Image (cartoon, rainbow, N blue to C red):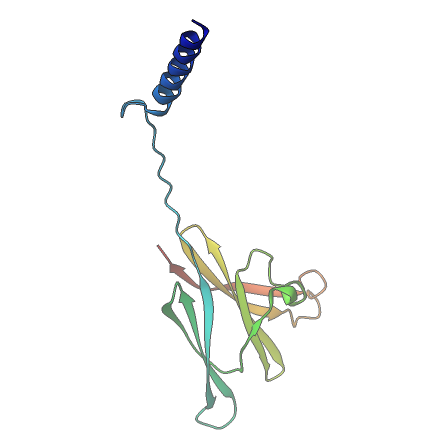
Length: 149
């Protein structure tokens, strides 16, 4: 009798476990989350000197998930700026990537910030105005806004 009772209890427990795991389609809830990754990178091309032989020319392109977004030919040499150097260049911590260079006595940097479904590229650098440099050591303004989605 104990054996039959034990077999019956095991059977009932198995049915309970099976029933809990097999919900009907009405009881099941599915959650779908769209994940979109965003990868930003610079493509910097050294084009040599300008037509007058005075200034180096660099072609700056922003790569958004591999798609090229041209930013223009700039009269300055350019190199990527490591994230560890953002603070000393006045680049905000929410910037994803940055690059810049020095030419003709001035530094000009470029950095990209993701704002929703746009990538905003800023340009600027150290404030050269002696009267306002203490209050605002760096000045950056929007250079270009690009939709990425």
